[in-house]
Length: 215
Image (cartoon, rainbow, N blue to C red; front, side):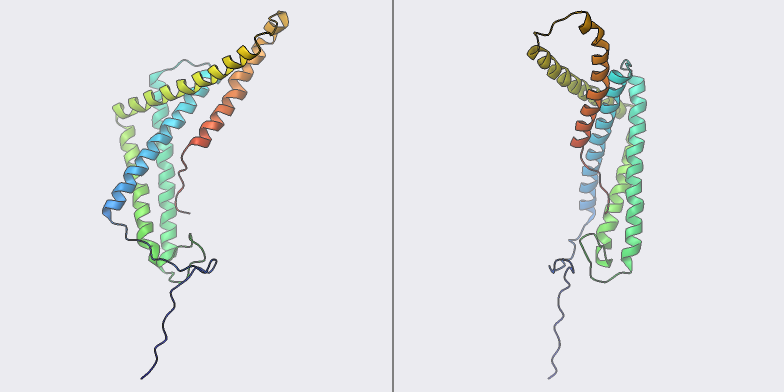
């Protein structure tokens, strides 16, 4: 009786841990991932529009205009849709590379032929999210809702910043208001509009969800 050598399960070269086959990713999973992607994309649009409204109001001294805000919404939606299309194109490249590669992965982002199904599902999600964004951007009601959400978020941020500044004023209420105070007022207002604005925008950016594609 001959002895048959038992094949060893593939392992990550970097860690030595067993390579687990990716779980099946069916149509319902793609649909659920697409819904999540659309929600994240919508939130990203609101946050980007909010930041532009803040810049327009504080730095450029522009009054809020709903028609102009609607144009910003459509522009931002197109930018986010293009990001998704770039992710889709990258997924295409990764799939093309992985299809003929049955080797052992060096790390978790070293995709092989067994990962093609999952990668194809991700590609479909990117495609569907981009398509949904463009369709939504053509819907006046959707655009108006984004404008209102962004406007409220902008005023919340501005109000919070002004409240903090008023607290600072209260703490230094013993400052002498003289001719020098009024001479320096314009410079203080400029600093509030510019430097504090960019600090606020940086904080907003740090809170945004990451829209990373296939690595």
